[in-house]
Image (cartoon, helix red, strand yellow):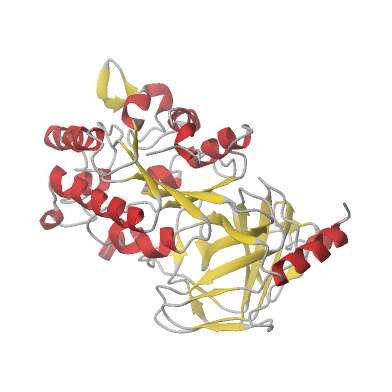
Amino acid sequence: MKTFQLLFLAALALSAGELHWVATWETSPGGPATNLRSFKDQTIREIVHVSLGGIPVRVRISNVYGTKPIVVGSAHVALRRSGSSFVAESDRTLKFGGQPTVMIPPGALVVSDPASLNVPANSDLAISIFLPAETPAETVHRAAFQTSYLAQGDLTSTPEFPAGAETMTSWPFLAGIDVARSSPAEAIVAFGDSITDGSGSTRDANHRWTDYLLARLTSTKTHHAIAVLNAGIGGNRVTYNGSGPLAYAGPSLRTRFDHDVLAQPGVRYVIVLAGINDIGVPGTSFAPLSEEVSPAEIVASLRQVAERAHEHGLRIFAGTLTPFEGSTIKGYFTDERETRRQEVNKLIRSGQGFDGIIDFDKAIADPSHPSRILPRYDSGDHLHLNDVGYQAMAEVIDLSFFDSKRRY
């Protein structure tokens, strides 16, 4: 069917209320880093890899941690070709309440009007945002493991940035992308820290464990219409909010649950993998020792997240904490902290409060030295995984967890 016919039918269905919105991509913003940067009279072209396809599409832009309003002078969405370039005929202007510009107050988020772009599954999009006034990046996902681009002036409709355009590996202000589907679709939110975020994976390769999970789901006949959303933030904790040198890690899982899980259209499942920073961070240069918490407190907080998920009809699966002996972060690992990790995992494996358990620990631990990552899975810092390790994590996930007819 030709593109214009698809657009026409989608418009009719949307007006009749027959289309269903589902998030196809998400990132979780944290607070500003200590080296806060600012933009002025510049266009940010952010590259993202979506999971589900659909038509039309809408984009979410956030100022949730901003201390003053930000002005978006122009914004576009297009299918990415390569590098900073997009497919010219796919370029769509994003509007907000019918207007091409929008002001976003501090603490707020805006959702664009639907744009008539047919988004293929497993494709790259280029989201271009022009910021005419001085705009500090107070709301940003710091570690994207994806190259995006920055250029002077309003280049939102320009198919390719000039040679030598600045590159960056963060996602400022961009929070999510939704697509419309003709039948209800579901989404999985992977909720966690840097191990979910993809630290240690190859940049621009989409080799986080969530990407490998998406590939597994896509290859099946029964799960190919499930989106996988990555809500991991490096340094994030279950109990304490990030502050000071750890401000970029954002609020705790309990604090950001509404924003990063419940607010996602179509969310049905949650995989939570977090707690290693609650064990390792206190007493390092990132957080005071007074923020130390016990294994029982970590798991109690995870169960609070699970209880809230259940209140909203979501199914939630808990991952065991992965090994970290030898971590290159000074003061992060001790034998006593390894004992605490094991106790957390023992409590998680009991299954209480969760719909299922994913034993990530067993999947990647060195059988001859279980407190360490298997060397062939180790990114080199003895805390995060490489691409092969993240694939091993995805392989251990039971896909039957995501069968809509399964009884729990």
